[in-house]
Length: 152
Image (cartoon, one colour):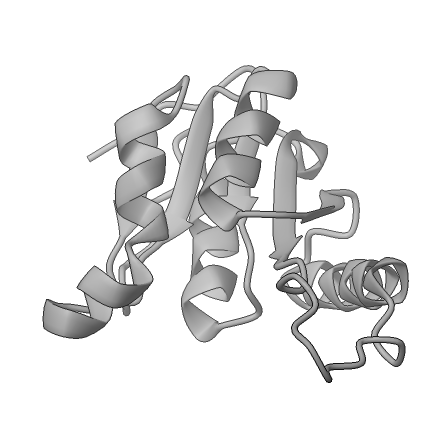
């Protein structure tokens, strides 16, 4: 099966898991140039301060910069040195959807971790929310998904 090449950008939500690294590999098969791939990591904000809790040791800006450096390293290892590394702070599903809209993404390639039952109910499914609200097509990859062959 030949997979089409997109002319614009492909957004890959990236959480440093093996599944998200595989999603980068799959996404690279849909683009002509690696710079069309955007790897997005979302740093969850700290919950509101509770009485007696001190968050002064945590710096969201530092966490975001560390994530950006780590994404760059992962992109280099995936042989995508010119892909875009992006980091946002917020709700993961909302940040993915908003980024797809802002960047006019042609495709989102998102891994799913396959949570089910109570865990999915309590945590929600980022992939499910993205599929439901995304402004573009979404390719959801199960763990151990095979990359499509490069069309040429």
